[in-house]
Amino acid sequence: MTVEVSRLANGLTVATEKLPAVESVALGVWVKSGARNERDDEHGIAHLIEHMAFKGTSSRTAFQIASQIENVGGEINAATSVETTSFYARVLAADVPLAVDMLADILQDSTFDPAELEREQHVILQEIGAAHDTPDDVVFDHFTETAFRHQALGRSILGTPETVKSFTSKQLHAFMERQYGADRMVVVAAGDVDHEAFVRVVEEKLGGFRSKSDSTIPQYAHYVGGDFRQGRDLMDAQIVLGFEGRAYHVRDFYASQVLSMILGGGMSSRLFQEVREKRGLCYSIYAFHWGFSDTGIFGLHAATGETDIHKLIPVIAQELHRTTEHIGQEELDRARAQYRAGLIMSAESPASRASQIARQLLLFGRPIMREELSDRLAALTVERLTDLSGRLFSTRPTLAAVGPVGTLPAYDHVVDALPGASSGLRRAAS
Image (cartoon, rainbow, N blue to C red; front, side):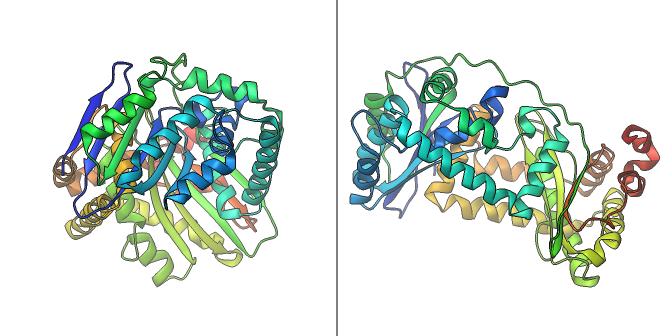
C-alpha cells in the first residue's frame, strides 16, 4: 500500500491510499485549525461551525444534505479537535464524486441560517450541560485548564454558554474566511480509490478555493501545571495526574507513547496490575500521552471510591519512581507489540487510515510509512525510557480531581511523593 500525494495550483494537498479488498472509500477535508486557533471572544466557535456544517448551503437544505448522502447508503460527519477540524464521509466507490461535491459545497457555500444557528446553539448548551454532569469528562477539562492556564490550548473545545450564545452567522463566516485556506487544508481518501480520478474531482470542486488563510500562528503554549479539586457528592472520585509531555515533532514523542503503554496501556500494565489487580484501589486506571504541535501532556487517570483516595496517590507515585529506576525488556517488547498492532489494525479501516494520513500531512508535511514508524519503535531501549521517565516526572505536576476528594493529599504532599521532589520540584511547586 502506497500513499500518493498531489498538490493543486491553489496549494491544496490531495492524497489517496488504495486499500485492497475494500469496496468503500473514506474521504474528507482536514483543516489545520481548531479550538486553539480561536480568539478569546471566539471560544467555542470552531466546534459550533462543526455543528453547523450540515445545516444548509445555497443549493442544499439540511434535509437534502442528509438525504442525498443516505440515499446512496453513505454517511457524513465532522469533528473538532484542539488543532484541527475535519469534514468527512464514507461512501461506495461510485459515489465519491457526490461526497466530494457535498463537502466542497459545505466548505464554500454554507449559509449558517440564523434559525438553524439558534437551534444548534441550544443543542450545544445541552452538550455543555451533559459534559458538566459527566465527572469523567469534566475532570479532563479542568485538567487541561490547569496544565495550560489562561491559554487557548487549555480551554474546553465546547466553549461556554455565554460565548456559544453570542455567536452570529457573520462571525462564523468570518472565522472560516480567516482560518480556512488551501495552504492549511488536505483532502484525503482511503479505500477503493483511484488517485488520478480523485484528484480531478477535487480539483473541479475545490481548485478555486482561496489559496491562503489570514490566520496568525497560535500563541506558543506554555505548560504551567498546578492543582484543581472540586468536591461533589458523587459515588466515586475522578483523578487525573499529569506532567509536561512531548510535541509531535520531538525525538521523545514515540518514546512517550510507549512509556504510557508500559505504565497504563492495558491489563498487563504496571498501574493496572499494581493499583487495581493487587491492591483493589480503583476500578479504572490508565495512562495517556497527548502530543500537540509545540508541546504535550503525559497523564494518568484513575476512578476510585472515597475510602481509597488517600492510598491511591502514594502507590501511583511509587510506580512512577520505579519507572525512573528500571523498565524490563519484556515490558518494552510488549508495549512495542501493542503499538505496532494498533498501527496495523487501524490501517485496515479506511476511515482510520484517511485520518492518519491527513494528520501526518498537516503535522509533518508528508505521509509517514509504517516501516519508518516501526524503525523508530525498534530504536527504543529500556535505558532511553528510564531516562525519559526521570525527565518527564520531574516537571511540575498537574492534579485535577472531581468528586468526594476531601481525603486527597494536599498538592504539596503529592509533589513530595513524586520522583522530581529531590531535584528541586518541591521548590518549583511552591
